Length: 392
Image 1 (spheres, rainbow, N blue to C red):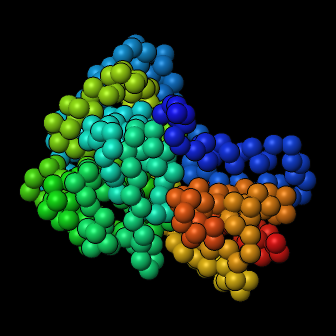
Image 2 (cartoon, rainbow, N blue to C red):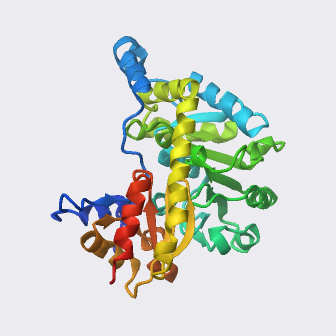
């Protein structure tokens, strides 16, 4: 009998795999690589935040010490205050935990909820790290096929629920699809999960770049929301704090008590400087963040305005929003081969849909993800120039 370790039950990290495709490839100066493979800002935090962080390093001794396992109390309280204002309803500081990034938030919550052989429903295409963790945790990923516009439907999910189902996970704005789930979609999933006594986990990593005004849902306003709803969040995208690893979980106190056990054995506490920077950003960078959102929305508009150029060549735009455009390519080759060939044929690095789908789902072989967070309007037009000329 072949023995597999936990890590051997899943696939290699997709972004790291894609980076290997450009090893040894030379890109001419007049045609540099366009890297649209990773959904993370590459710029440093804004100058005022950098100065605040420098002061923390030099003058705040607590920045270098262990802190509470569930995070900086002041940051937990600030999230509770701002979320209460922006979503409505009531969120208390003791219903918030800080994690070392949103990936850790997901692993902590699913570890608190699941055991070997349990099931979690993920709409496809899914965020690959969610699938990877469930594999390593011995939890079965149950794929949910969306309908038109990459929007999943609660009635389709209902047919997938078994006595081993512990949660349904939604990501909105979506990674990799980019789409923003309508409030009524989240409401329907909430009602389904509540009726089945399972959890609805909503990853809102990209909430700061939602094109809609006002709250994207009203789940925090529901009486007893914490019995069903769990929200995940990341500070990486909002304040360019990717390397400092700061995320958050909003959930019931009993769930956070279980989360605390997990976090205490993995990282003991979140990064102190990252937490203090996130708090400083929440309190001081509202106007700056609004500008970041406007820039991302402009890039989204550029994708939508210019995509007709690719549509004329047989491409289809399946979803667009936040950091992502999710597309269907027109070639006879599967998307993993297309993605590799685009490195040399077009000087473009992106991820294939096969990285966001189960192996037996043929749709992934037709799809590609474009992460446009680090390419401006001019860069997107250059990307279209190159893709328009590709014939594989």
